[in-house]
Image 1 (cartoon, rainbow, N blue to C red):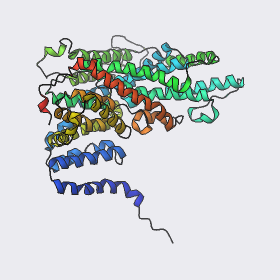
Image 2: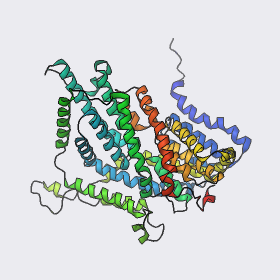
Image 3: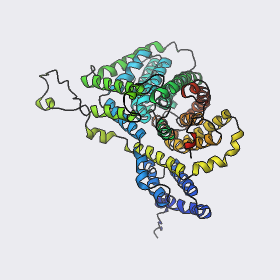
Image 4: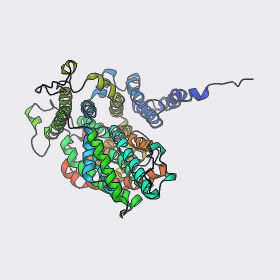
Length: 539
């Protein structure tokens, strides 16, 4: 007799998504306030973001349905949260990143850094960390890790080949692909070297993202929140944030480099590594030569990219008047810059129009811009843009419903705690949550929350917002914590315990770096010790 299949495994996910609002409904009927409804929506979205039962971008659309239905925010007002100034900054920078990737400029930069640092494993590791962190400052952390992984795996394959050839003393050793290499047939030093190289990629991608406003989602969430909080006069600009966060990047990368050596390979070199270093140098040189000579379109994108970064930096550097002061206050923002240079990519030709190349065919001589919309549409991370918008929308609901004020009042007991104690508590809580959920989701929840608590404590909100923002990016312990971790873990040479061992101390060290930086030079950069005049604008 055939077994009756009720199809329960197939409907578990949709059943959970549909039933959870009904399970939360008694809370609404008991309290019947907008703040309670908003709390239920935030909790519902948090569960869906953490479990990823449905796509995260789809979860980000829930406020567009829930908030208008329950009378929290009008739909026409909520739409603007999905296309904020910060989201257009991100959109423009993504177009520039796609342009950089399309001409392989990112690979050229990475290989140049690797060749300049040397091929000794410890210096090679530093080269991977520096190149990954630098690219991650201006590109998506996920895209950077995905781009660097093939370079790392090819280096690991060469390391594996050279070491086996040296041990067996034979030229008849077949080079293995990355999926053929396992810890069982590698020496302990080899295993540890592979771990160092792989962990360098995922950790540096997350660390590099903290250094610029556009480097990670939490930074953009913070920028949009502060722009509204300070009524268009936010103290956090591209330049001021870089002055604050870039020193922390240097400290974290230096510690990461030393810590991975202590944990895995030590500080003594293998006397037999000279031959391997020469082979690795040849591998990197070959990869660089395969790119060919630098082309016209690479030079153009390099100039446009440099122009975009410098324009961001000097628009409003705070320490002196920037070019933004040439225009009426509030008219020009970072999104103006990013979109201006993004549009130029669709205008500038991919071939030098002043040089007549007879080798080119008639078809190639026709005008073709550096970027086409077809390519941008294919590579654009539309889901991330919606995810950012969902974070802004959720935060707006927390403010408009009065939920942030309710939470602030409930946490009035914290008023007597010293600020540094609360900052430590915030860093631990945010880092713990971001290990299991999206860093954008975590920042969207905590940034409005800590701002409300700052109002209750009559403290400058930046004292809490800055650490909460940075802590959202410090997910080092689990593969699911952040996409770079998952990408590197997919190579099959790491175990979860490797991430946990290396990431735990990195998280703890990060706490101290964030707290000390905020309390010292961060206070000077942002005038944190003085509560802002418009602190009452926090609901």
